Image (tube, rainbow, N blue to C red; front, side, top):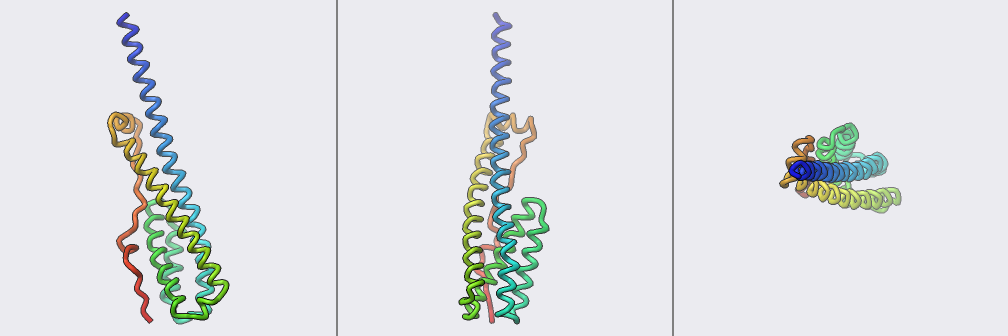
Length: 182
């Protein structure tokens, strides 16, 4: 009889470990999938930028510094390989794009240019998608972090090496309003 009780307890423990491991794996995969969604939208934004820069170049030839900053930030993003590097590069790119968009205020002809307006609209839609994708990513990171840090699943997470993910946070520099001087 005692053997059956011990065997039953062992089966329950193994079952609990299996269920918890699967839940942790599912949460980890959700985080990875949501990061991939951010990556797709960030790549779309990076692909829009050369067209936008070329359009602005025709109107604002003496704004070379701003245009160079946008190209540099885009290249940094494109060359980043780790999610943390991509997050940082994305922040730099956002800041550079904000400055670029502010140039349109100083150039009425640029503001009326159909290519620029179309690219600006596409970029705004992409930025909105990035915002939503970041929120989904951070929500999935939050749920995953809770699973790997809360008892009793923390025991299983530590046994199988589940590691935390970084939240997609706005860098301090990104919180500042860009200043454009002419």
